[in-house]
Amino acid sequence: MAKKPTKREDEAPLAALRTVLKTQAIQLSPGINQISNPPPPDQHLEYYFIPMQFMTQYQAYNRPGKPLKNLKLVNYDKPAISLSFFYKHKYSIERQVIHGDVLQHIKNYRDDLLNRSLMEQLSVGQLKELRETDELLRRVRQEPDAYQACFSNYHHKYYYWYCTYRYFDDLASMKTTTSSEHLLKHTERVGHQVHERLNIIFIDPEYINESVPHDHKLIDRELKNYPIHLRQGITTLYLRER
Image (cartoon, rainbow, N blue to C red; front, side):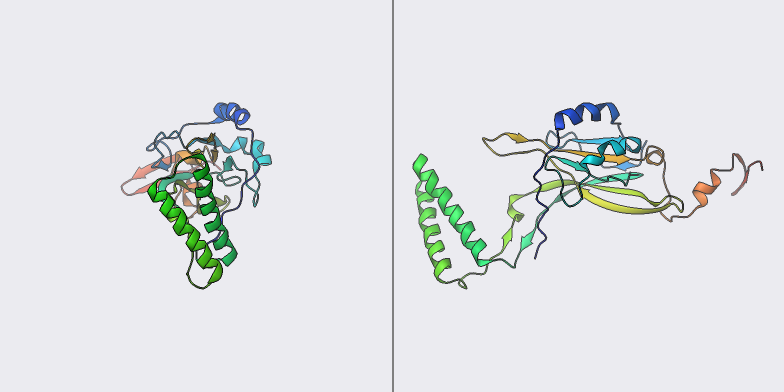
């Protein structure tokens, strides 16, 4: 059975947060920073790159297991040393369904058509759909095993930007880990208000500007401690005063 997303209910004060975020946020660019494929300007996607020194100011909004509806701390306590983004169709399918849930879904669909018929004249196609839905509801009630059912949002075309970030799992040994998270986006239903949502991505200002070897070896960090470099052929001598 597909894992259902955690329900988000509480909201953060976005207007107040934006005022603070815009004084802290920095710009990152491919070729200068360790970032690839950043999302193009999109009115439905709002995100900020925040240096790790400000991270503790957002501790109250870090709520594992009970996330906020309109704010996502993408990588709290895991400041990124490199970032990449990709666009993905996010969907789920639930095959082990409860008969009562199936009945309720059909009933809600039928009731929406009935309510619409009270407000406006239904088309020939809509009237036919109402009759067919009524018949379907009766049969599913009378014959619970007549249909095989599943729930999915596949055809709703929910596409999201994902952020993949690398961070130090152990700074002493330079061991890194990579994780991915989808980003929240502004949503709007026709005739309804826009629901604004924003994302905060914390970054390590020192390492977001330089490559960290994926082999997790200490050599890169160790050689930084030798200020004198004498290169001959394919070998460099590194020196430091005792």
